[in-house]
Image 1: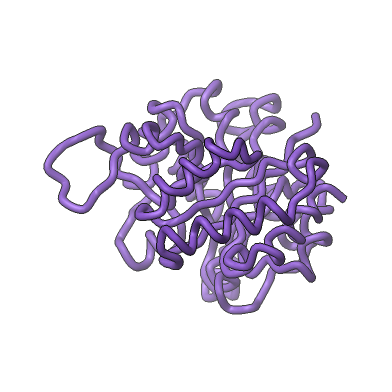
Image 2: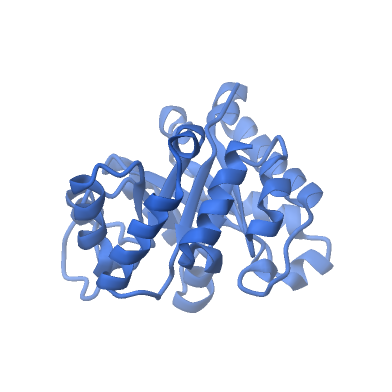
Length: 257
């Protein structure tokens, strides 16, 4: 089964709304129709830029998807500082990161919290990007696969097969995020295959074949083609390189090749 690659640029806590507009305009100029035909390309700005980017994408009919970096699992309530899934839907957000390693490590998102967010995003009609990955210590101890597959199982708890088939899993080894280190393409392919195998165990082979599994962790123009050329890797979750329109465009073009 052919899966459309998903290339998502996570801007993290960078760029105000004016800088965001400029970056999206440069990115759109750098991409060709064949690039956006070959892959789903998504930008994931901070909350403060979502409205501006959404308006630009819609107004100029840009072939880009819009993602959010996180959300709360409740649809409304007394949760100061939180953003609900329905709020994101109104801004035409299509994808939401759930369980990024920085949310897990810095903000205390447990597997249970991540699962709540995954289910809330699905219930709102958006696509969760379930982020999983091991630390350097866990990899050195030989526990990488066990850690990742446990996170996948926990993240998908209570999710039915029909919805599970629509979501995205992003394998991001924690030791490779923002460090310049990158998993080898063989390692990335093997772990993405393990993720798909767990999905198959939880559901069936058909669901596993439909789920898109990205790789993330210091993806750059120089290594994108090799990573994206692997059979189990269905795209990339890009951090720092997505803040440069030309670099991100090169990564998107690598999915086409």
